Length: 408
Image (cartoon, rainbow, N blue to C red):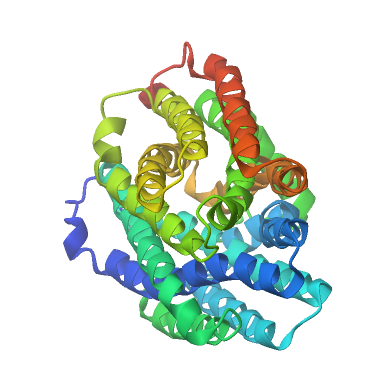
């Protein structure tokens, strides 16, 4: 982070930040098309909703399993160099997918590709606070969130046409090429030095387990970070189940599975819209209360979607769900970047993501199992009810919190 007392550059004049945004724009387009294309690819090859849910589960499992190893790596080595290498590897794994037909090799490749995604995401969120003043961190996070959301909208919206034009397998060639370009463009980001500093206790620890234990102690010691982690841990199965629900809803309720890409694009549009004003709301309300509102709005959106039978109504509902999701996600990134010391960000961020995503398989596998036994409308109603119950259990974590200035 720039030293205190220096004049904060406007974000549009911050060249290191713009270089990071430009390079990752290419990667986010590729990852957006890949994440939309993967479940459609598996569903076409296997015809099994449960296999589709397994592929989604294995795509996110590395965010939990890799936490003890990714955090120390991000803290110890140049984050710019890690971005270059991990995006290149990501594209290489995706390049293999079109040649696979059996489900198990597809699952293995999806898992390995997502291992690279863990490195990418942790490098970005750890590097971003180093490029801006703390007074601009909320605005920079909103700008990054808008870029992510707008790119997700672009990639998922174009995926509908790309899948139709190229096919569900050949679209991965395009994803691989874009990730290669992202890796090359990441070289434009100013190289940061490796962060190992022997004078800082606990920094650059040799043991990944010790590093994770240190990260857990930091999470436990800060009430905002602890509440943020537990709240997302409680609600994460709802997000996972919705990922499985959406393509099945498109096929069974709307009559066309490829509408899934359009509904995902609507969620992305809502994320972009919500991120535009999220940082302003963060200046006026308690952050964890905003997370709670986001959870309740998301559960209500699932209920409304269960009652929808037309594409346009479903698009509007998904747009609204994206808006409320942006409030929670922007708060999640802002709080942990605001409160976690720079020298521990890699480990703490990776550990938080691991803990938060731990129950995600319950949502994936649970919805995959449920969707094969009840109607998609009944499955959506049960998911909405579960979301409201879990949001209710999150409420105590929003009460009697100290100000951010006192904890920061």
